[in-house]
Image (cartoon, rainbow, N blue to C red):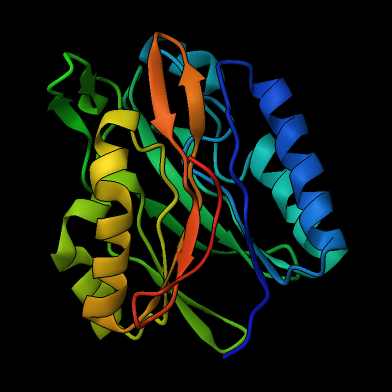
Length: 239
């Protein structure tokens, strides 16, 4: 299996238009470097207070996903759209944390809604309560593109090895883990967990992540990486 892969690491904040412009520049750069597959981080269009979800929410497909589809078509590359805030179709004020996979023709071939929501109080006092606004998905998702089977997950899912075992048993060869891991947990657990999931399942792991601060006074770890089935880190970005 050979697939020239790029992961995009950004410092998205609470301005969707600026975040989209940044991601589009990186997609063009990745295409210019010969990438055949490009992966984006969790919540790349908007990373900020939950109170801003209403304005940031989109549908699937919707304006931002359609821009990713256009890039995939134009450059004939597979695009994993990280995740976006997807508006819930029936529950006002509720959303999904939704990931999409787009083929070289710009078609959405898979849609996954994050199963495990990040509800924790960290030792440094930070509180994260994703379930205040996000509804969990109810489906495990794999998809085949160009003869390669991808398994989809998002961020906190990484801590639940059972999900990744199911993905592997369903034929996944590449596990996708877009994330916005916190600085506090990321520096101790991020790389260890990614390499463990790769080794346990003999799969590649592609993990694009956010880096830097975002409102309100929170910080992401970074260190996006690609791991091979032996657990070796093939490429990584700074933290």
